[in-house]
Amino acid sequence: METINEQITRTLGSQRNFFESGATLEYEFRRNQLEKLEQMILENQQEFSQALYQDLHKSEGESELSEIGIVLSEIRHTLKKLKSWMKPRKVKGAIATAPSTSHILYEPFGCVLIIAPWNYSFQLLLGPLVGAIAAGNTAILKPSPMAATVSALMKKLFDANFPPDYISVIDGHREVNEALLEQRFDYIFFTGSVSFGKYVAMQAAKNLTPVTLELGGKSPCIVGKEAKIDLAAKRIVWGKLLNAGQTCIDRKSTRLNSSHSGES
Image (tube, rainbow, N blue to C red; front, side, top):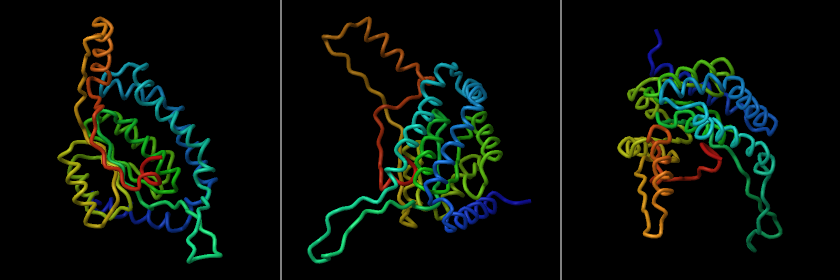
Protein backbone atom coordinates (compact mmCIF):
# COMPACT_ATOMS: atom_id res chain seq x y z
CA MET A 1 0.00 0.00 0.00
CA GLU A 2 1.29 3.45 -0.94
CA THR A 3 2.48 5.58 1.98
CA ILE A 4 1.52 9.25 2.30
CA ASN A 5 5.10 10.28 1.45
CA GLU A 6 5.00 8.16 -1.69
CA GLN A 7 1.60 9.62 -2.64
CA ILE A 8 2.86 13.18 -2.19
CA THR A 9 6.05 12.52 -4.17
CA ARG A 10 4.10 10.87 -7.00
CA THR A 11 1.46 13.61 -7.15
CA LEU A 12 3.98 16.45 -7.09
CA GLY A 13 6.07 14.71 -9.75
CA SER A 14 3.08 14.32 -12.08
CA GLN A 15 2.09 17.95 -11.51
CA ARG A 16 5.61 19.14 -12.31
CA ASN A 17 5.58 17.13 -15.53
CA PHE A 18 2.19 18.59 -16.45
CA PHE A 19 3.33 22.13 -15.74
CA GLU A 20 6.55 21.71 -17.70
CA SER A 21 4.53 20.49 -20.69
CA GLY A 22 3.24 24.07 -21.04
CA ALA A 23 -0.40 23.00 -20.80
CA THR A 24 -1.30 25.66 -18.22
CA LEU A 25 0.17 28.64 -20.04
CA GLU A 26 -2.54 29.55 -22.53
CA TYR A 27 -5.35 31.97 -21.76
CA GLU A 28 -8.05 29.57 -22.98
CA PHE A 29 -6.88 26.83 -20.64
CA ARG A 30 -6.85 29.10 -17.59
CA ARG A 31 -10.25 30.57 -18.43
CA ASN A 32 -11.76 27.13 -18.95
CA GLN A 33 -10.43 25.89 -15.60
CA LEU A 34 -11.81 28.91 -13.76
CA GLU A 35 -15.20 28.36 -15.38
CA LYS A 36 -15.00 24.69 -14.46
CA LEU A 37 -14.27 25.59 -10.83
CA GLU A 38 -17.18 28.02 -10.80
CA GLN A 39 -19.51 25.39 -12.22
CA MET A 40 -18.37 22.82 -9.67
CA ILE A 41 -19.17 25.23 -6.82
CA LEU A 42 -22.56 26.22 -8.25
CA GLU A 43 -23.64 22.63 -8.88
CA ASN A 44 -22.70 21.63 -5.32
CA GLN A 45 -23.49 24.85 -3.47
CA GLN A 46 -26.14 23.24 -1.27
CA GLU A 47 -23.80 20.42 -0.37
CA PHE A 48 -21.06 22.90 0.55
CA SER A 49 -23.53 24.82 2.73
CA GLN A 50 -24.52 21.62 4.51
CA ALA A 51 -20.85 20.73 5.06
CA LEU A 52 -20.14 24.16 6.53
CA TYR A 53 -23.13 23.76 8.83
CA GLN A 54 -21.90 20.35 9.90
CA ASP A 55 -18.42 21.66 10.76
CA LEU A 56 -19.19 25.15 12.09
CA HIS A 57 -22.99 25.33 12.37
CA LYS A 58 -23.08 28.10 9.76
CA SER A 59 -26.47 28.94 8.36
CA GLU A 60 -26.94 28.86 4.60
CA GLY A 61 -26.99 32.66 4.51
CA GLU A 62 -23.80 32.96 6.53
CA SER A 63 -22.04 30.40 4.35
CA GLU A 64 -23.00 32.42 1.28
CA LEU A 65 -21.92 35.71 2.88
CA SER A 66 -18.63 34.67 4.41
CA GLU A 67 -17.37 31.87 2.17
CA ILE A 68 -19.10 30.69 -1.00
CA GLY A 69 -20.17 34.09 -2.33
CA ILE A 70 -16.70 35.53 -1.79
CA VAL A 71 -15.04 32.81 -3.87
CA LEU A 72 -17.63 33.02 -6.66
CA SER A 73 -17.18 36.79 -6.78
CA GLU A 74 -13.41 36.36 -6.99
CA ILE A 75 -13.74 33.89 -9.87
CA ARG A 76 -15.99 36.26 -11.82
CA HIS A 77 -13.70 39.23 -11.21
CA THR A 78 -10.70 37.17 -12.30
CA LEU A 79 -12.44 36.02 -15.49
CA LYS A 80 -13.12 39.65 -16.41
CA LYS A 81 -9.53 40.72 -15.78
CA LEU A 82 -7.58 37.62 -16.81
CA LYS A 83 -6.77 38.55 -20.39
CA SER A 84 -5.49 41.99 -19.46
CA TRP A 85 -3.50 40.59 -16.52
CA MET A 86 -1.72 38.15 -18.82
CA LYS A 87 -0.62 40.76 -21.39
CA PRO A 88 3.04 41.79 -21.35
CA ARG A 89 3.49 45.35 -20.08
CA LYS A 90 5.80 47.63 -22.01
CA VAL A 91 8.20 49.62 -19.84
CA LYS A 92 10.82 52.24 -20.53
CA GLY A 93 14.24 50.73 -21.16
CA ALA A 94 17.66 51.94 -20.10
CA ILE A 95 19.84 54.07 -22.37
CA ALA A 96 22.46 51.33 -22.31
CA THR A 97 20.07 48.90 -24.02
CA ALA A 98 18.79 51.30 -26.73
CA PRO A 99 17.32 50.86 -29.30
CA SER A 100 15.79 47.70 -27.79
CA THR A 101 12.35 47.61 -26.16
CA SER A 102 11.58 46.31 -22.69
CA HIS A 103 8.55 44.44 -21.37
CA ILE A 104 7.43 42.84 -18.12
CA LEU A 105 6.27 39.28 -18.75
CA TYR A 106 4.01 37.62 -16.19
CA GLU A 107 4.91 33.96 -15.72
CA PRO A 108 3.59 31.30 -13.31
CA PHE A 109 5.71 29.95 -10.48
CA GLY A 110 4.92 26.30 -11.20
CA CYS A 111 3.68 23.86 -8.54
CA VAL A 112 1.84 25.57 -5.70
CA LEU A 113 0.93 24.26 -2.23
CA ILE A 114 -2.14 25.75 -0.50
CA ILE A 115 -2.69 24.88 3.18
CA ALA A 116 -6.04 26.08 4.56
CA PRO A 117 -7.29 26.54 8.15
CA TRP A 118 -10.45 25.11 9.68
CA ASN A 119 -12.27 28.38 10.41
CA TYR A 120 -12.66 29.49 6.78
CA SER A 121 -12.23 26.05 5.30
CA PHE A 122 -13.93 26.86 1.98
CA GLN A 123 -12.88 30.44 1.32
CA LEU A 124 -9.21 30.10 2.31
CA LEU A 125 -8.72 26.93 0.29
CA LEU A 126 -10.45 27.98 -2.93
CA GLY A 127 -9.69 31.72 -2.84
CA PRO A 128 -5.93 31.16 -3.24
CA LEU A 129 -6.68 28.47 -5.81
CA VAL A 130 -8.43 31.02 -8.04
CA GLY A 131 -5.22 33.03 -8.20
CA ALA A 132 -3.10 29.92 -8.74
CA ILE A 133 -5.25 28.84 -11.69
CA ALA A 134 -5.35 32.33 -13.17
CA ALA A 135 -1.57 32.57 -13.02
CA GLY A 136 -1.06 29.22 -14.76
CA ASN A 137 0.13 27.09 -11.86
CA THR A 138 -0.73 23.57 -10.76
CA ALA A 139 -1.85 23.13 -7.16
CA ILE A 140 -1.91 20.68 -4.28
CA LEU A 141 -4.65 21.59 -1.81
CA LYS A 142 -4.40 20.66 1.87
CA PRO A 143 -7.68 21.29 3.74
CA SER A 144 -7.85 21.25 7.52
CA PRO A 145 -8.80 17.94 9.19
CA MET A 146 -10.61 19.99 11.85
CA ALA A 147 -13.19 20.83 9.17
CA ALA A 148 -13.62 17.17 8.33
CA THR A 149 -16.90 17.42 6.39
CA VAL A 150 -15.68 20.20 4.10
CA SER A 151 -12.34 18.42 3.66
CA ALA A 152 -13.99 15.16 2.58
CA LEU A 153 -16.30 16.99 0.19
CA MET A 154 -13.41 18.92 -1.35
CA LYS A 155 -11.52 15.71 -2.00
CA LYS A 156 -14.55 13.98 -3.51
CA LEU A 157 -15.40 16.85 -5.86
CA PHE A 158 -11.86 17.67 -6.99
CA ASP A 159 -11.12 14.01 -7.64
CA ALA A 160 -14.24 13.91 -9.83
CA ASN A 161 -13.69 17.19 -11.68
CA PHE A 162 -9.94 17.83 -12.06
CA PRO A 163 -7.06 15.53 -13.00
CA PRO A 164 -4.62 15.02 -10.08
CA ASP A 165 -1.66 16.06 -12.22
CA TYR A 166 -3.26 19.53 -12.33
CA ILE A 167 -5.15 19.99 -9.03
CA SER A 168 -5.09 17.45 -6.23
CA VAL A 169 -6.51 17.40 -2.69
CA ILE A 170 -4.40 15.62 -0.07
CA ASP A 171 -6.07 15.37 3.32
CA GLY A 172 -4.77 14.33 6.72
CA HIS A 173 -3.42 15.74 9.96
CA ARG A 174 -0.31 17.71 10.90
CA GLU A 175 2.05 14.94 9.85
CA VAL A 176 0.72 15.30 6.29
CA ASN A 177 1.47 19.04 6.39
CA GLU A 178 4.98 18.23 7.52
CA ALA A 179 5.42 15.64 4.76
CA LEU A 180 4.20 18.14 2.17
CA LEU A 181 6.60 20.80 3.41
CA GLU A 182 9.53 18.42 3.01
CA GLN A 183 8.94 18.61 -0.75
CA ARG A 184 10.18 21.39 -3.01
CA PHE A 185 7.25 23.50 -4.15
CA ASP A 186 7.53 26.65 -6.25
CA TYR A 187 5.17 28.65 -4.06
CA ILE A 188 3.44 28.07 -0.72
CA PHE A 189 0.26 29.77 0.54
CA PHE A 190 -0.44 29.08 4.20
CA THR A 191 -3.19 30.34 6.49
CA GLY A 192 -3.07 29.30 10.13
CA SER A 193 -1.30 29.75 13.43
CA VAL A 194 1.81 31.82 14.03
CA SER A 195 3.65 28.81 15.46
CA PHE A 196 3.09 26.59 12.42
CA GLY A 197 3.61 29.58 10.13
CA LYS A 198 7.17 29.80 11.46
CA TYR A 199 7.66 26.14 10.59
CA VAL A 200 6.30 26.73 7.07
CA ALA A 201 8.69 29.65 6.58
CA MET A 202 11.63 27.60 7.86
CA GLN A 203 10.89 24.69 5.51
CA ALA A 204 10.31 27.02 2.56
CA ALA A 205 13.63 28.77 3.21
CA LYS A 206 15.52 25.52 2.59
CA ASN A 207 14.60 25.79 -1.10
CA LEU A 208 14.22 29.61 -1.22
CA THR A 209 10.53 29.01 -1.92
CA PRO A 210 8.46 32.21 -1.90
CA VAL A 211 5.54 32.16 0.53
CA THR A 212 2.39 33.96 1.56
CA LEU A 213 1.74 33.60 5.29
CA GLU A 214 -1.64 34.69 6.58
CA LEU A 215 -1.37 34.18 10.31
CA GLY A 216 -4.01 34.30 13.02
CA GLY A 217 -4.38 37.48 15.06
CA LYS A 218 -6.71 39.27 17.41
CA SER A 219 -9.75 41.38 16.60
CA PRO A 220 -9.65 44.39 18.94
CA CYS A 221 -12.54 46.84 19.01
CA ILE A 222 -12.38 50.39 20.35
CA VAL A 223 -15.62 52.17 21.22
CA GLY A 224 -15.26 55.95 21.24
CA LYS A 225 -17.12 58.20 23.65
CA GLU A 226 -19.23 59.58 20.77
CA ALA A 227 -20.53 56.10 19.86
CA LYS A 228 -24.19 55.16 20.00
CA ILE A 229 -23.83 52.34 22.49
CA ASP A 230 -26.88 50.31 21.43
CA LEU A 231 -25.84 50.37 17.77
CA ALA A 232 -22.18 49.72 18.56
CA ALA A 233 -23.11 46.78 20.77
CA LYS A 234 -25.20 45.19 18.01
CA ARG A 235 -22.39 45.57 15.47
CA ILE A 236 -19.73 44.26 17.84
CA VAL A 237 -21.80 41.20 18.73
CA TRP A 238 -22.56 40.53 15.04
CA GLY A 239 -18.87 40.63 14.18
CA LYS A 240 -17.91 38.54 17.18
CA LEU A 241 -20.43 35.79 16.50
CA LEU A 242 -19.84 35.61 12.74
CA ASN A 243 -18.15 32.36 11.74
CA ALA A 244 -18.52 30.86 15.23
CA GLY A 245 -16.41 33.71 16.61
CA GLN A 246 -13.44 32.65 14.48
CA THR A 247 -12.64 35.72 12.39
CA CYS A 248 -9.29 37.51 12.64
CA ILE A 249 -9.17 41.11 11.46
CA ASP A 250 -5.76 42.17 12.70
CA ARG A 251 -3.61 39.61 10.91
CA LYS A 252 0.11 39.43 10.45
CA SER A 253 0.92 38.73 6.81
CA THR A 254 4.04 38.20 4.76
CA ARG A 255 3.38 38.43 1.04
CA LEU A 256 6.27 37.69 -1.28
CA ASN A 257 5.72 37.79 -5.04
CA SER A 258 2.20 36.56 -4.43
CA SER A 259 0.43 38.16 -7.35
CA HIS A 260 1.09 35.24 -9.69
CA SER A 261 0.85 32.25 -7.39
CA GLY A 262 -1.50 31.54 -4.56
CA GLU A 263 -3.56 34.68 -4.83
CA SER A 264 -4.78 37.01 -7.50
